[in-house]
Amino acid sequence: MKLPKLTAVIEPGEDGWYVASCPELGIVSQGETPEHAEEMIKEAVELWLECADESEVRRRLDERKVAIKELQLTHA
Image 1 (cartoon, helix red, strand yellow):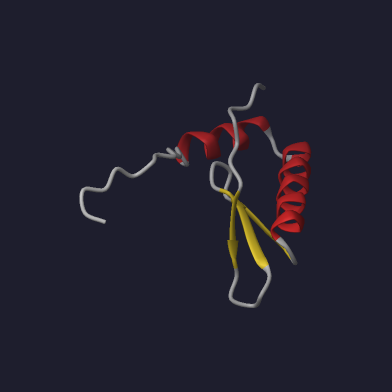
Image 2: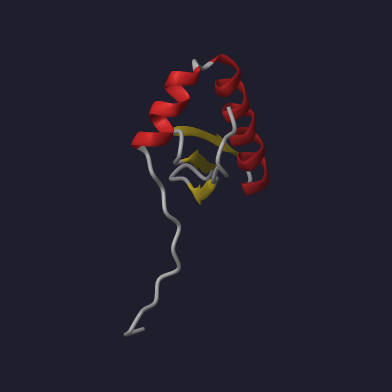
């Protein structure tokens, strides 16, 4: 199965760690630094894809359509 481009969203967490998520698949991880969080979400996605049934991958991709858009603000 050919996957679309997947996204990693990395944000500061409440505990000083960083939370990383892949919104297209609904997978979340964390790390002590943004770089560590990125490594951890990559590993989590790869491990999940190794074990997931192709129908589950398709279901998540179909249900979790994600669009990344730049906001064009009229008032800033």
